[in-house]
Image (spheres, rainbow, N blue to C red):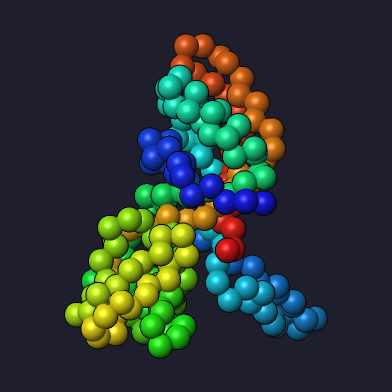
Length: 191
């Protein structure tokens, strides 16, 4: 598998898609009805369906061309989830990797609960705070200090690294700009 950094999945189709986080939990119930559970993944994997974003012939043409370009499930690509695509305020966190590099994270907080998720595909134009000078690798989410103070956070937009979860796309033509097919699933990939 390789990863296509550009072009990003068409935003006009992504804007109408379903996409969100999923966890993996194993649950065992004993004879008394009590449950024990195990969280199999420490971080969620996002999944979705882009079928709902296709509304015109031009969008279908773009989707088919993109599907051919990434060869179905074979290659990963960038996807903008309109449900979760930016870090603002204190959401953009950094984890030190060395004396001069940091990995970008986004922190999700609700009350006393907090979870941070690694960001590997920031979008050009991310702002790093801290008073120094920095570079941002948009292919890894790694911030490198080039001078001054250590970075303290970041804000801006990011994409998800995903792939199609099908190798066949079979739309059925019904009438002008009206097609039918069951699903075009996409799945986040760990990089």
